[in-house]
Image (cartoon, rainbow, N blue to C red):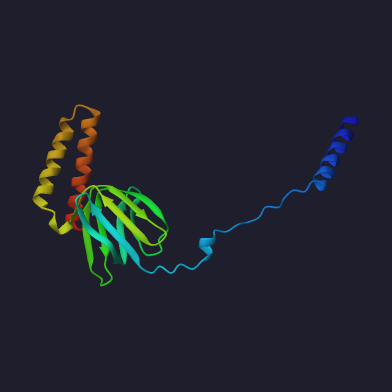
Length: 175
């Protein structure tokens, strides 16, 4: 019984100490920029690869980008993001409704809070410039290289080539 009294006395002491201590109450803060209206209704788009620019600070309506997590669309006022390109079709929707499609092998995408977008591709080609016969030949060659590969590095390189050629083939087919 004396142990129970000590516990009760101790718990009363703790409550008394807590009431005498000034514990600051949590305060909620909101991002100042989130509360401000965003005026950007245009998207400044820059897209290129080493040695060639396709768009330089162009005003476009939307860009659809193939990334490691799937294809996603970018409009003005998109949340700031970084993404890695995967082989696939990058589509640019112009304000007049026309769509320009490019095959990209890999690269990076940067979406900034000022509605500017930069895409740097390792290799990019307008889809209408892809040669279907050359793509089929490249796919066949990559598959042969995979079958003949004797090291992990050779298998990985061959698999990357297969993935890229399959993505080009799908781009040509319009998938």
